Image 1 (cartoon, helix red, strand yellow):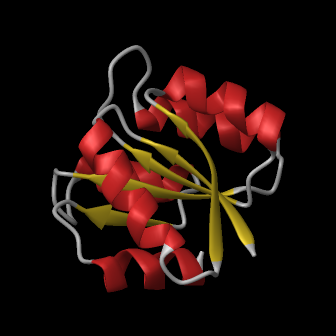
Image 2 (cartoon, helix red, strand yellow; image 1 turned 60 degrees about the vertical axis):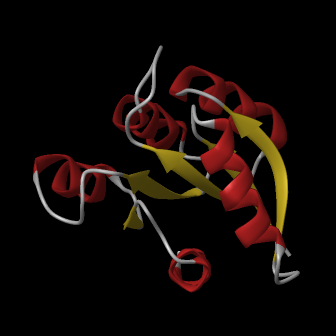
Length: 119
């Protein structure tokens, strides 16, 4: 079972993601963070296999957190979540920084699950 950290400043989105991710028995949600700075700390203490992280958050955005997480070289896979759509500068930057994929909001459960399976 893959261990997943969910990072989103929206409680409703985080709950929606947790429900989707937990629904199959393939993934275990091991924690939540509401910004990139918290994500870095939880990544260090809980050692997740996957991080599902929003791009736009207060305190520290997802791209800055992604840079830091990739630099830690902990072999965690990161899937970014965004309301910006599937194209554009931030999408491209996330992939270049090491994100395995980017999911656009609003999302379907099967899209989220398939993306995490492939990460």
